[in-house]
Length: 131
Image (cartoon, rainbow, N blue to C red):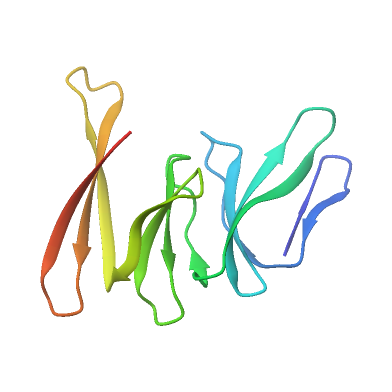
């Protein structure tokens, strides 16, 4: 997979997959040579693309939800979460992860993300992540 700018120039190539970019961010996600990466499209002075972070421990990654975080998976299928800054929010120790945005008092912006973490033993944990 590759990304092409408006001049039909290849600005990023060699990806196993590239996820859809959020309209809220210039940061996207991809898998390159079997490793999850965060990529940024730079629009200043001509469109280019660069790898911001590469996660050797993760083999898959979702789209960047709200431009804030992405779900990742290791080679065993265990899921975790990384931020748009390349930090691990939740280590890949869970069978599956669901999330929802919780809105503030004025309902105009979300204030936290509530993660529901499903463990392989059938138990469930909850984690809130402040935005």
